Amino acid sequence: MRHTLRSALPALAILLGAANARAGLSQSFQQVGHLGLEVAAAPGGNHLISSGNLTLSQLPATAVIVQATLYTSQLNNGTSLDAIFAGTNLGSLPPAASDTALLTYYEYEWDVTSLIVPGVNTYSFTIGQKTVGGGTIPAIALVVVWEDALEPTRLVTIVDGLKQVGATGAETKSTDFTGLGEGDTTVWTFTVLDDRTNTGEVIAYDGSPIGGPIDSNLGVLGSLMRLDAMSVNGTNTLSITTNLDSMCWLVAATAVTAPPLAVRTLTWQDVKTLYR
Image 1: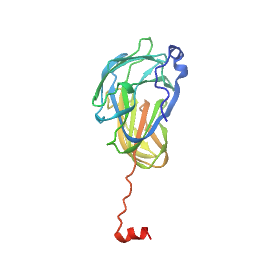
Image 2: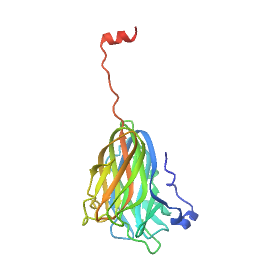
Image 3: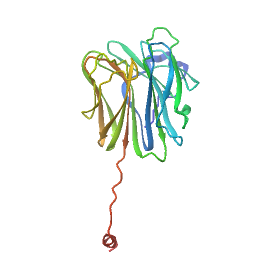
Image 4: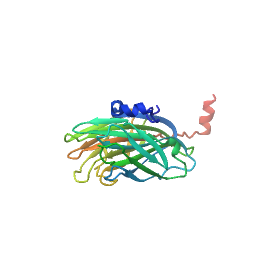
């Protein structure tokens, strides 16, 4: 399954804006192969326009980029958001997703696949709003999937959009990864607007705690978590439980490493038996 919402949209779509934004989190990408997955993130800061750098640490120079997407969120801006990435003006896009509880938050995403260069690890960004009425840019994430012959066989799955957690009190929110296989799994979560004052959040995978708390490890307005889990065949559920804190969940991703093939040691007698 490939994402269908990443390409630049015509001006008409920008005018429609929030009306076309999907609700909640949904599975947007899944592929198997000799794949790598990394999520890099940076604080946006308490500004309407935020600039900084996103740094990858695992991307090999021999990689072939499969998909790369830039994400952020904003309060009260359901019209459009502007982004510059790696010196390239990405233009204005309408929100890709939204969620309303006490307030309405919007998620924005840009396809930057063609701008990721194997061997180049640091990428500059400037994200901001030209229209009036939106909130700050809390944090920014970059999700990159690549193919390389030296990577083990992995099934990479990405879930994205926007889901508010804890907006109306203590609760658990979850998202499903479908079509997974059994194996060791790296789990990524990217949230914004979480804080350090109200703590104790728990991240669970198929009901088993694998991480937490979520306490703004990117600064004051966002967190990126990289965790370890074990997947089973079929659907696996990732959840966030919060007590007093509220946050927006923008991205979750899993990379399931296929178990090694069993090697059977044969004696000479076993070989002769096979041919009788």
